[in-house]
Length: 112
Ligand code: 5GP
Image (cartoon, rainbow, N blue to C red):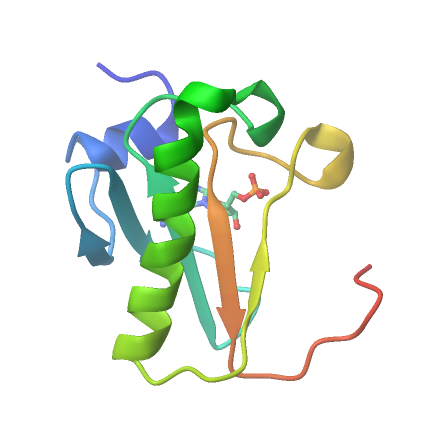
């Protein structure tokens, strides 16, 4: 059994509303959305957080952003925010790297 919730989703041990999937990535709706559109883009490789990546993850990291583009193109989402929370102090609660795509409402700047 996988030991983090996103690995369980990747391994189809628990359900999620999957938006997109390929060999490197899976994207699904956030279970507790913070905006009308709230999608998580997750690498299938187990990477705990952005600060633990290295040069060898370059392809995965680039791919994640291209998947953001693919999803936002597909759903014609023109204005959106992409967020990575890195570490508990920054709001990370699931320690498996993920990008949040948030859209469908106005966002303040700077973020809270
Ligand atoms: P973080 O706070 O780590 O940046 O973001 C983790 C996100 O994962 C949160 O927005 C939270 O709502 C979402 N999340 C946590 N558990 C689940 C789950 O079981 N399924 C889905 N779809 N999202 C989850």
